[in-house]
Image 1 (cartoon, one colour):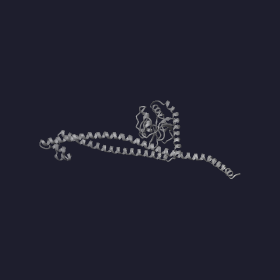
Image 2 (cartoon, helix red, strand yellow; image 1 turned 60 degrees about the vertical axis):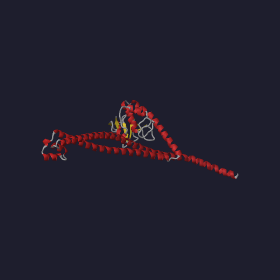
Image 3 (cartoon, rainbow, N blue to C red; image 1 turned 45 degrees about the horizontal axis):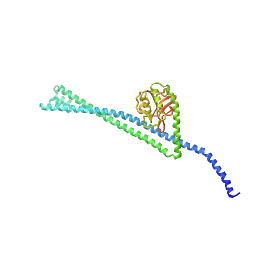
Image 4 (spheres, rainbow, N blue to C red; image 1 turned 30 degrees about the vertical axis):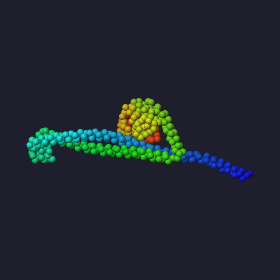
Length: 339
């Protein structure tokens, strides 16, 4: 046998063993790769949930800010009216003083009107009867107007501070939401080309599976009547549409935007905030839930969904996910209301 023949004789078994080893090891390698992607998915999901929570806090701050700004505007208008009235009364008192001076100086009554301490003046002068009724009325009107203006000015100052606090809360929460989302994107950007494609494909498959399951559950709303039924059926029509911060339809939604518009279709007005919506309606316990109840989650009430029945809710979960049907036990329960 030639030298090359002997070499080929040994090379072939080595190549065969290498191929077999690769086949034997590939399932383990693939399993490791899948586990790695699952870890990434969990990390990204958690950051996106935190981003959605911060975004809901921003929604709450925005609603409160709007109310405070309207309140501040009303008080400022009141302050302006009272200030104008005070100026008019000052002019009136000035005219009285000028007329009195022209007629021979200030009378005892007019001295009272302009005395720094009217009580002491009256005690020393002992001439209360000299004060005319019109002068007393004018003095009291001015004193009351001045007191009201002072109180309103204090309220304006307080409202301004409250508006500033709400503005800071809104800015801080919005910035936190964007920061969490940026952290999630950073993790995704760190994936290599092939892993990134596999991750994105898995996300598409997961959303498609969620949509199929959600649509299969939609028949549960067919027997629900009244406002609850109207809201549920509208919300179920949004299944598969993506989540977006602050969105209230029709192509994209966040959790409280979906519940707000769904119940608006049923004639119920709600604010665009889970933290504010929980204060509407009648509170119900977890064990008393009925289809159409709003269910709130997490300690800071940063998520809301509509109860569908059979332990299911319909919600817009968080960035990267679409409107879907999910288990009511998938998140920490914070409360529920019936509208």
